Amino acid sequence: MNIVVLIKQVPEIALIKVDEAANEVVLPQGPGTVNPFDEYAVEEGLRLKEKHGGKVSVMSVGTERTDSALRACLALGVDDAYLLCDEKFQNSDQQALGKILAAGLKKLGEYDLIFAGKQAIDSDAAQVPAAVAANLKLPQALFVKKVESVDGGKATVFRTTEDGYDIVEMTLPAVVSVVKEINEPRLPSLKGKMAAKKKEIVRWNAADLGLDGAGIGANSMTKVVKVSPPPPRPKGEIIEGETPQEIADKLFNKLRENQIL
Image 1: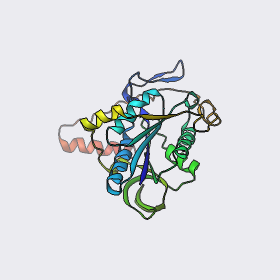
Image 2 (image 1 turned 90 degrees about the horizontal axis):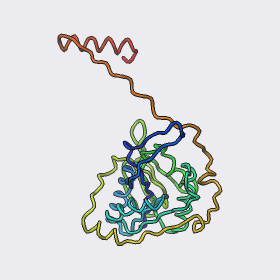
Image 3 (image 1 turned 60 degrees about the horizontal axis):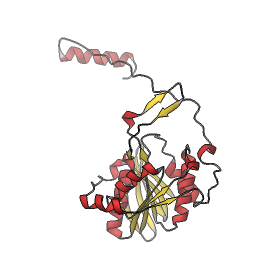
Image 4 (image 1 turned 180 degrees about the vertical axis):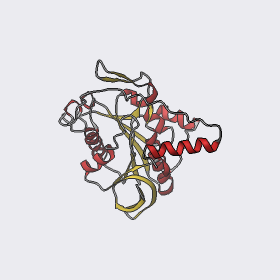
């Protein structure tokens, strides 16, 4: 079984700044890290590999700095890493990223399952896995909390909903995005870290993928019009009283006044 996990290198969220005058988001200079939700996707891929055999690859759209995120996945036991890197890819929106990744997967050629985290913590858009599936015309199941079985060219998964979950059966190949309830990601071993340093990361540019710039990068369908920080949180209120019962009564009345109860 061949599994490809789509990952994203994300910055340290606490260090992101917003420059309203320049109308841009200022990212920290550090190497960043693997998107936390993608770590669960990598772990699920590795578990299926251990159960069914085959190999796990990771693929990302990024820059040379994305090497560190890819090598972090290799250190966990991932077999191959692919970096889609080109100036034409810069400033791509989520639909454009889906198009680029789909082109990378087409070039890769062989895969049974494509995993991804449910969303990236920097954009929180949760669009890329669905966009990849649409570009490749593949079945998709998003926000999956359990892979029940993979057998006979089909996969059965538990897809989370507002009311619980759906049990979905899909023919392979298929695209699956996962939530953190699906597993507990492993930590890399020292041996894995050493091996990851020696691994070659395959790099493909726009020409390698047959992309001419249409619909990607600066030619994406969406544009950033205005950038601003979120409004400050309102100050909380401390309810005081001489007894716990008095405090509880005041809290109840406050909630009822605001029509929360």
